[in-house]
Length: 316
Length: 257
Image 1 (cartoon, rainbow over the protein chains, first blue to last red):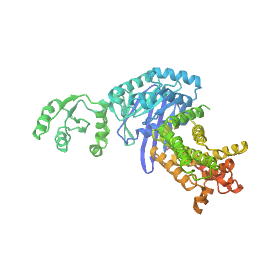
Image 2 (cartoon, helix red, strand yellow):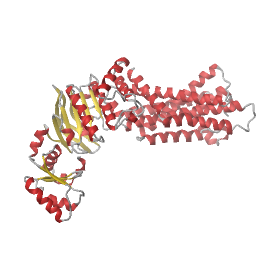
Image 3 (cartoon, helix red, strand yellow):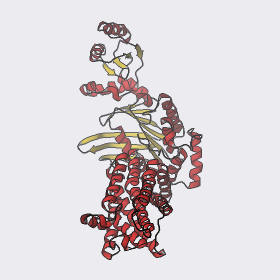
C-alpha cells in the first residue's frame, strides 16, 4: 500500500526555488531515507509531507489524502529539541498524548508503556533539562509510539548525538520499523541512511537517484575508495592527491577520499608523493564505497564544477 | 478540551518552574512593595500611611500583571517557536485557538497567583483598603482589563521577536518604561501634564487608577478614572491590543510557510 505519494512537487521561497519537480513514492512499512547536503531541500520536503509547509505546486498525498487531513497518523520530529526542559519526561509525553486526543487515564497508561519501551522509565520523573542529548531525542521520537501513528518523519535526528547515543537511537528507529510504521529519515549522514530500505539522494532541490543503499553504491560505478587521513589539510596536499583521483577527490573531516580504479597500486605512490613535499599520512586504506561516496560521484557527474568547489564538510 | 487542559498544565508548570519568570513577576514587584512601603511613605501623616501602602500594593499588583503579560507570555511563545515546538504542533491535529486558550488560561492563573502574593506582601507591610464587596468585584474586572492589555502587548512582542531573551527583555523594557511614565511608580500629580494625559489613555495605568479609586478613593488617584468616556476608552484600547496580538499570533506563529 502506498503511504506517501508525491508528484511533481515545487516549493518556492521568494525568488528561490527550493524544490524543483520532486516525485517519489513511499510504500507502507518502508524505511526511507532522504539524503543530501545542507540546502538540498530535504527539510522542506519533509515539512511539506508533515503539513507544516505549503507546496507551491504539485501533489502530496498520505494514504491518498491531503496531508492536513492525515495529521492524526503522522509524527513529525523536527531538527530542534522541541520537548520542554522545564517539564519531566513523563509530563512531556502526557502533554503530547493529550494533544493527540487521549483521555487522562488512557494517556497515563500509554505513557507508562512508551517510557518502558524507550528505556526512560527510571528517568521519567526527572526534568528534561537534566537529560542527555540522546535521552532527549529518544523522548521526542517516542511521540511516534502512540498507536494511531502510521508515519514517522525524522529530520536530522542524530545531529549532535555522540556515537553511542546515535547507535541507540538508530536501534529505536529499527524497533519502530518492526512495528510496521513507515519511516522517513532526513539526514546528511551517510551512515544513518545505510540502515534504510530505500535511499533517495537529493541535491539542489532535485532527486539525483533512488534505490536501496547497495543499488546506489553499485550505480555510482565505484569499486574501491582510498581513504587517506592526514594531520593537516592544505591546498598543496589537495593538489597532489587530485593527481591520483581520476574519478574525483572528496575532502572529509579527517582527510580525503580518493576515487580511482587502481587503488592498490596507487597507495604507495601517494605516500611517496606526500613525503616528497614534506607531508605525513596518519592512515591510508582501501575501503568499500559508502553512500556518501555514491552521492558525491553521482552529483559530480551531474554538475562537475559546482560539486568540485562545494564545501564537502556538509557531509560527515 | 484535551488540548486546552494539556496546554494550560504545560504553560502553568513552565511559568512556576522558571526562575527568571518567578523573579520578574513575583520577587521584583514584591521588592518594590517593600522599598516603597518602608522608604517612600515616611513623610506622610500616620493616618493615611496604610492607604498609601494600599495604593502602592495595587500598583505593584498591576506591575506583576503587566510583567506576566508583556514579558512571560512573549518569552513562552518565543521559546516554543525557537525550540521547534510550534512546528511540531503545526504537524499535529491541534487547533491554534485551543492552544491559545490553554496558554492564556495558564497565564491568567499564574498572574492571579503572582498578584495575590504581592497583595499579601502589601498587607503584611501594613497596606489597608477601604472598598466594599461590590467595589472589590469591580476592581477584579479592571484587573482583567489590565491583563488583556498586557497580554495583547505580550502577544505582539512574542510574535515579532524570535529569540527568547530578546522577547523577554523587550517585554520587561516595555512594562518598566510604560509603568514609569504612566504613574505606576509615582503619584499621578507628580507627572508632567503630557504624561498625565498618557496615564489616562494607557489602559494599564487608567485601569490601575480605577482600582485605586474603587478601593481607596479619588484622593489617592488625582482624577476620576470612572467617567464613562474614560472607562470606554480603557476597555476599547485594552481589547484592541488583545485582538491585534491574537490576530498576529494566529497569523504568524501558526501560519504554514
